[in-house]
Amino acid sequence: MEEQIIAMICEIKDDAQLAQSLNEHSNIMEDGGLDSLQLITFVLKVEERFGIEIDFEQFDFDLMESVATFCRYLSELQKTASV
Amino acid sequence: MNDRRKRELIIGTFDAERFWRDPNLAMLPSFRDPEMENVVMAMDELLFPLCEAEDRLITRYRMNVCHQSYLHAIGFDFISNSTDLERPEGGNAGRTANIFDLITSADRMGDMDPQWLDGARLSPFAVIPGADRTAARYGLKRDFPAIETVQTVNSKLYSTELNRRLGLRSDSQTVHSHEELLASGLTLLNQGPFLIKDEFGVSGKGNLLIESEAILRRVTSYLADQCSKGRMVRFIIEPFLHKELDFSCQFHIDPDGTYRHISVQKLVNHNFAYQGSFTADDRLLQLLQEAKYFEVMKLVARELYQAGYHGDVCVDSMLLTDGRIVPIVEVNARRSMSLIKHYVDRHLEKHVAAGSMTHVTVQFASDMTFDQLLETLDREGVLYKPDRGFGILPLSANTLLINKVISESKGIRNKQVKGRLYYSLVEGEQGYERLSAKVKEVLSSLSFKIVG
Image (tube, each protein chain N blue to C red):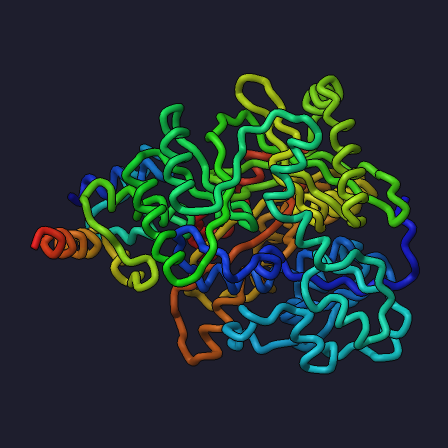
């Protein structure tokens, strides 16, 4: 999942080289350099890819502190969605 | 050229569209970015190039003293308030109150001498609610159009309708419900990705690119939720066009309807967000002449005047990869970043220099002052000075440091914050790429991490 998330960030930033500098510890906003518009595109694509729904209003930006943290959050959402 | 009276009071709010938008309209999915909202609130300092001698600039937060001294030293002539209209950490209130609300509710205009105000002309960046109240309260002369007119002509619905009225090719359509958005969107998706545009969205916000049915359904269901709470749906949708270039035309409509061309600026955008303005080259100007683009701009001016508008206009346009020109993407019946750039260029021309306008978004935690930044840029030989003939001309300081100020006023030190530095890059004989890289190198050496 982490590799997929990194690939999606690179796709949105239109920067394939970015993948070399990102890893599970990377902050999605700061290291990925996503602005608020790119973030919404990213989240919509994440929803589509992983079959989940994220609450835009209640979204906690601390979940973006690392790729690993965000992936754990997505896994939780997937579990809830499948119940 | 401009029939300006002696004294103008220049005031602005850069997110004017927010104050024109009907709050009952449903919104596209978005995330708030409070730090960037603070940056936008500090952007009014960028209006100084519009000032001439004797003019005054009123900014929400007082301008940085070192920045102001630098600007004065290189020949910009203006006076601005030396106190804040609002405490920077009071930004939450500011998100609902525009600068005119602050001025009228505080019943004072910073430390402005009330006598000076008498007879001065109010010159707003954009006519938003409260501008007329401010003029009345302080006895300022005003010759701007009614707010309702300005609101109407700045709507993207107006731009869409204008294309039709002028017989220009337009693939835009307006949708009035989430069901209509879904049905029309599915049809458009058969041809390829399409854009959903908010009626009062600005570049970087309020546009959403739809590339798949799943995302379209997610967005329409999000809008359906808002409808169930009483919000109205009204968006413009259009096929995503492959652009070669974004550019804009600035012109002025005099109170008697006379059209005055100002400039054409090429805009470098990345993922819909503004990256910089560059003066149109001869090749582009010739292309526009041949396509009778400027005739269309005169027609736009005529239509705007007939609708009751006069003042500054910036029309966003596109050159597509297939060579087609889309003259009216969006009408901005207000002043603009490109107009500010034009005024900076006019200043530079006096020193036989020319510049392009851009910005960098940075993150930093250090206690760097603006004075230290200027000193370092100067020491490294890249701070613009007329005798140097090239370098970076910082156009803003508060936009860079505002979140640091807010964070420290809350007693939080060493917090990583976001800031944005707007500047004109005066190439001289250095070359754009080389100079731009050097500026970024200096910023990095000062612990500013460039994120955009």
